[in-house]
Amino acid sequence: MDLFYHSLLSTSSSSTDDNNDHHPPKKMIQKVHFHKFMLELHKSLHKAKTIHNLSGNDLFPHILQTILHQGNILCFDEFQVTDIADALLLQRLFTGLFDRGAVVVATSNRPPRDLYLGGLQRELFLPFIDLVEETLVEVGMWASEMDYRLVGTECGDSVPSAGAAGGEGGRGKAHRVYFVDDGGKGNTNAKEEFEQLFVTLTKGAPIYSVVLDVSGRQVLVPKASEEYNIARFSFYDLCGKAKGAADYLAIGERFNTIFIEDVPRLKFHEVNLVRRWITLIDALYECHVKLVVLAKTSPEEMFEVDLANQHCDEVFAFDRTRSRMEEMRSEGYLKKKWVGSKHK
Figure (cartoon, rainbow, N blue to C red):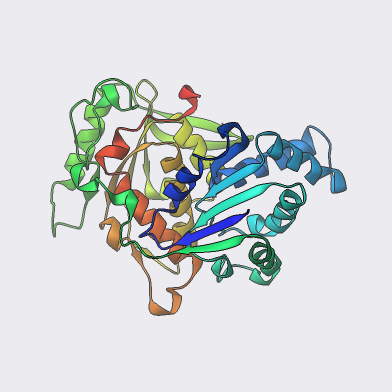
């Protein structure tokens, strides 16, 4: 049976996928965050075209065989569509999966009919929604008032010291990880505390710029301690330029602790900045990166939305982002082991 769970953030859709792990043998199951799955799909398509010289009718059967070879039960966590390229791929992909007998379980923060709401050329995406509603059993989960990502956040707001920043070894000394620089209205020492934490965790090690290769493109990391796998960016380094999930995952897989400063309050019309921040947080969360932020406002007040836009896809996606930012400050999250490239 194919299932599509959707809920507000108050119910943990991620924990629903976890519960499904208790039934079929794990070797049959692929559980993956949807952003990461789509990134790997684009990489596989590029490889099939450039290395295997496949095209046309030969391309998708090859991709589907590769996917199903890893397991025919696919659990997609945080099913969210904000990109037109992804939207146009999905109908062909899912039709092929269903035709080959794959079982699909997807979790989302909204029902299928509301996916990609307000998106570019959404009319081209509607046949995929019809396919989902015809094939998957929709399960709405709205009863709980608990956002399980936020359980334990009141106990944390700290990060291990440099010796334990990768999630290995002892706990180390605890530090705050989210600083609000509100122009002197509140914590006037936020900048100094943020700077001191960076100095403390890097332990005086040399700081250099680093260039990462991402599918033949260069991604600049302006400040990095390679000795301690710590990187530092401004918000506009990461979100003010054209970057996507591949770039952010490459950063998260290379550095276990990331400092981001000058994070502004975002407005709905700054849609590119909003989407990139959403994608960035998803990628760092997926890699269990320790995130240290210097922002103009709290996570709760970071995204300003007017009534006319409150039902758009970015608003729902940012609710997830806000929840993840809160969880990333919790003691439970900060104790997680980094799953970057050096641990694969």
